[in-house]
Structure formats: C-alpha cells, structure tokens
Length: 250
Image (cartoon, rainbow, N blue to C red; front, side, top):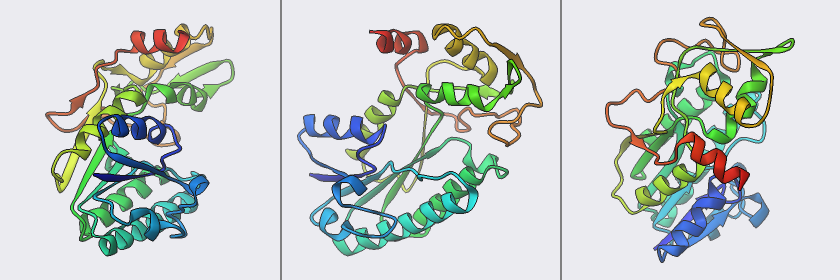
C-alpha cells in the first residue's frame, strides 16, 4: 500500500521510509525538500493521491512558543483536510509521552493541541506517544548547564533509540487504526540526571551532573511521573543504552 511519511527527511522519517519499502510498501518521503509542505499545504494533494496511510513525524523548525503552536496547528489542519479529500484510511502522528503533564512547555502545549485536532477529525488515527530519544540526551544535558556543572531533574526517565521508534511505527502502519494512543519507551528506566550522566560518561564528557529534584526540564517542572510512560502497557524498544552507544562508536 502507499504510505506517505510527512517529515520523511528527518531523524525518524529517513529511517522509517526504507523499513516500509523493505516490507513491500510504496513509501513516499514528503517534506519541503521534496516539494511537500504541510505548513502551507503546498504539494499535499499530489503526494497523498492514492495513499492509504499518512505518518506524520514532522517537527517545527522553531520551538518558540507561538511558532511551534502555529506549526502543529496549521500543518495538522492541512494534513487532515487533504487526507479526507484523498480518502486516507489511517493517520498516524508521533507525539511525546506525558505531553499533557507539562503545560509550562510551549512545545508540549502545541503537541497536545495537535493531538486534539486529530481526535476531533474525521480520519481514523493512531497517536504514538514516545519517550525522549537517546539521540537527544546531549541536548538535554546542555539544557541543564549551570556554570561548570549540569543540573537535571531526578524525575523518572525511560528514553529509547530513534531506530526503535521507526521500527514501531512501521508495525503500527500495518495495524488497524487504534483511534487512541499507543506509548513507546525504552527498556531501561532511571532518573533524567542518571541517564544523562551515563551518556556523558560514554562520550567522554567529564562534566559533573547534579541530580536536583527542583531542576526543570527545558524550563518546565517535572512531577513524580516524570518523562516515563503513563499507561500500563507501553511498547518497549529492544535497544539498550550500552548497545546504542556501541552502535554509534562502530
């Protein structure tokens, strides 16, 4: 079947498209670089013609509060409208575990708004909420820099490899629409501070990580639910952190 991956040239999209192609699907990478712009609507009608499934793994170019809200609002509205016209049977959107628990984050507010549009729309859907990716651990470390140290929350954390996200999305493509939410997480759980400390040690970064219950996550406070799955049966990626580090070094 034809599957259009919105954001197909990004971190997840460029891994998802070849997986789908190997499974025998007609997978199309759609992004501004290929002439498809969900934010403006340009190229959507042509890209979605004949498509059965659309997977939206796009991300906002700017995370400033107003800009990120505009991106997810407009692009999602344009996608849903184009999908309805094209007869798309399944809309899959990648979101973030615990997005509704972080109202102080403009990015998370935008993701919650995106999810609301999808739920209210006419296209059958699956919202896939993933925990943070191993690839983002360096950025999380930099967000907590205070002088010569890195101060990060002690809240629960269960990140996963981006390759495992792509693999899970490929399987969900072949499932019936859940008309609900699926959670993805990594196989190991610890605190934000501990996991980032492991990342820094693995990359030879000698800076000290201070575990601080009051530290914020990109400006947002975390409660005891942290950035871990909130449901009882999340899908767990198979790749453990040490294996991911070994793959990167190789």
